[in-house]
Length: 480
DNA sequence: TAACATT
Image 1 (tube, chains in turn brown, cyan):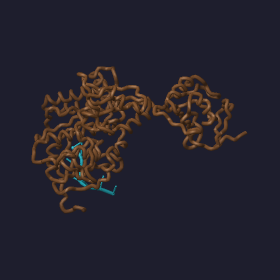
Image 2 (cartoon, chains in turn brown, yellow):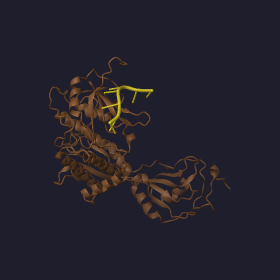
Image 3 (cartoon, helix red, strand yellow):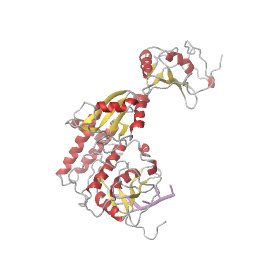
Image 4 (cartoon, chains in turn cyan, red):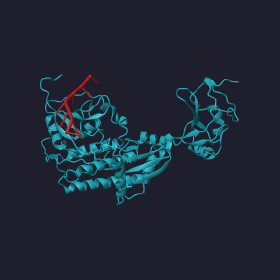
């Protein structure tokens, strides 16, 4: 009578038996990995979840059962974190994808292990295929690159299940694509290997490779925002036809995205309408906004909507104009990479364009309002250790009505086009880590600051308009 | 609506 390890919560009834000895691995090793010669896992390997395992069986016991289908890379019985008790299931990764597939078809629901009531479960682990974890959005492709080219690019990272270049109705590439890998691991490998790795011919910025932004909730969020925008327009009849045209454009754009992302289904308009109804019904207004509408006529101040600026880039679709990479020029001085903007010129078009790009980039980088945490270090690490710094009088801007998700990096991004940014700080509630929706940007000269005010004050983001003004001088009590 | 380099 070998006492079961750890005080044993024996399953009721006769102890489960399999052919193998039920050696209770006294050593509670967390897993049995490699065997003899450390095996390598293929890039496209699949992690399997194995359920309905008798609690008496440990890795050693299970191994023979599964080895039949191929070399095992890793096999781990799940144990309760606290009690260490066998949870009746395991994770299993074969070195080869094919082995996993074989095991799945041979075993899943096909056989019941002794002592169990239900047949064994062998299927890709939830972490594997779930959601869009293996589907990538690829941006900044050359317009002339087709599916074949994209495949070639991603092939080294695993098995490509799907590859679609997004195209305009006229067939021209939008410079982006979706690539679906066989597994999450492959997708991650591709991100690691390709994101930012090169700049494709004809692209304005380095390659973008990230998880696709097709999540239902995100779509909802966008809808929600649109609803917000529409709602905002109705009660207060803004005097413009351009406005509704713009809104329509947004809707269509979004719908197109949805359609592209979710495949055939409802027509775009119907889809939008349906989604928006949901939104209204739930009225879940945690309300982070994507910078959907972004426009402000230089000089003419807020309150008017000019002709459409560049179409909105969600997900990197829109025209990501250059300068989306916020490369710090030096330790704490953020340069825009252009010659210092000649602030005399009232023509703000070019920097504005870049500011838009910054916003677009923001949209691309923060598709998930659900994951604020992950937004912590999107930029070069060197962009982080920035001391809050004031520039000279007249160089410091106070910015209010920032989108909730806006962080320092986005702030820099947005104001970079107007001059060298000495510092940019979004204020964060210390308790919640939430942005307080305001911040500061300092330039190294007053003209840049003025230009930025001209261009960005009133800049519409979502339903809000940025407020950009000189920081209140705090005359005497300067703590520095 | 909101609010100025935070503990």
